Length: 139
Image (tube, rainbow, N blue to C red; front, side, top):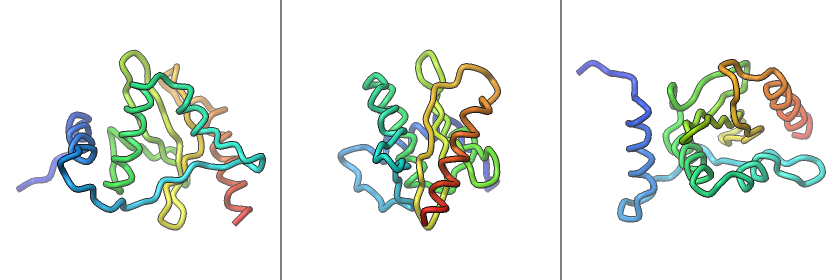
């Protein structure tokens, strides 16, 4: 049987199955961890908390889908640059992105934002790169 790329609705179905109360929850392939600044702040967690509850749930479900199903490709996850990847969440009227890196079996959530243009803003990518560099130098 030939393989095919999974569509966004396939990922939503997987996510619903994963988050269903009746099905057993599989062990995650990756452990998700928020990037923590030297001040103790977790910028991605703060960003998520600021989103409306329904959008927060959608972004969280997509992060969980990546945790449980890694490696996953488009349309949910895209490779950006070097070690930086993005989780792409289509919200009702806008698009959310979470930039992350993989390190030692962990999915490190570096930066979250609402995308306003087709192209990834350079400032957001640079911020994720700086956070990843700080994280690597601290290890």
